[in-house]
Length: 170
Image (cartoon, rainbow, N blue to C red):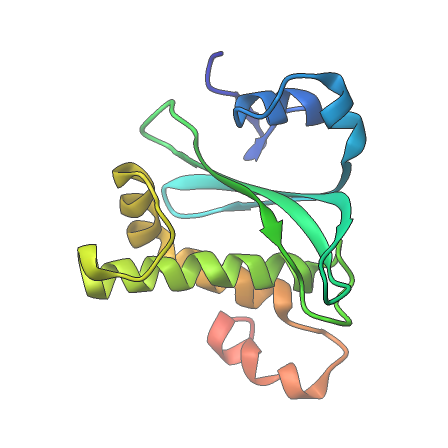
């Protein structure tokens, strides 16, 4: 399959093709078993990024929803899409599963992994990533962290006003 094209800085793939692109079982029953929750898109200085969340319709032993995720990063200079995916994300208790705060929490994990790789190199305590994925997390850790902060910011919460200065919205 060719790398997806993106229009207006958004990576365009329908739900089942995206799952196939991830290497998931191409059986349409798997696509039907998960509910696509939402897609978030952003633009970094030299790449586009897309995060998708699906509800797996499962809960863990603590009663938390188990979500499938896919984070795609498309550098401007390359045609390759680099994807991080899994079916093991559990948003915090009280977090709406299709909310910006839920997506921001997941992105914070990726930002943390990138910072760990940057400062600890091969000794970083992170999941098994390919060398290219490690390089991308190292390169885009700050961008992922800022995207996470932007999504987690609650406009109605006065305690989040300090984020405006950090995000440059002041």
